[in-house]
Image 1 (cartoon, rainbow, N blue to C red):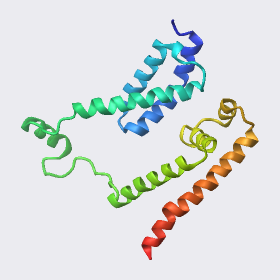
Image 2: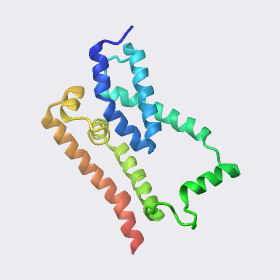
Image 3: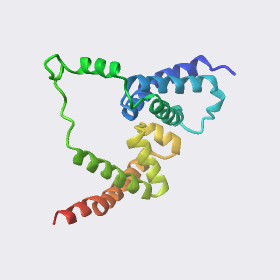
Image 4: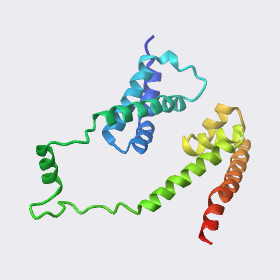
Length: 192
């Protein structure tokens, strides 16, 4: 079965969203482009796989997540931890001037402790999101992490905009309470 021109246009229109998501996950533009291309190719090769049980964007992001994992696995095998002397010399020439100083000013890499704290916070946040009641958790994920528009969510879940906002408000209140006890409460206790 071949994809209809309308289906192809819809997929192409979602390319920037997919690319943004992939770049955030991979932090490598070339790898992100590869993953998005593979996602779009998979969707175009088997248009019948899209059953319409969700929004096209949601379905494509689901495919993309698998392609991102594949990309990470593939590239981790390609990276070599041992470089030859010639490769090291080439790298030195690229990074350092003849006087031994960096060719370009290096960016501040930040504080590793702050980075670890951010990772810990994200783990607590994810645990709090998982504790949300089914519909609230799903709505929150669709709106805040998948960045779906309100009208898409309402259509997908057959709810009114008012109901959506009430449920999102309740989800945020629950998240605030969970974070207060699981994160902020713990950090304030550690400080004393």
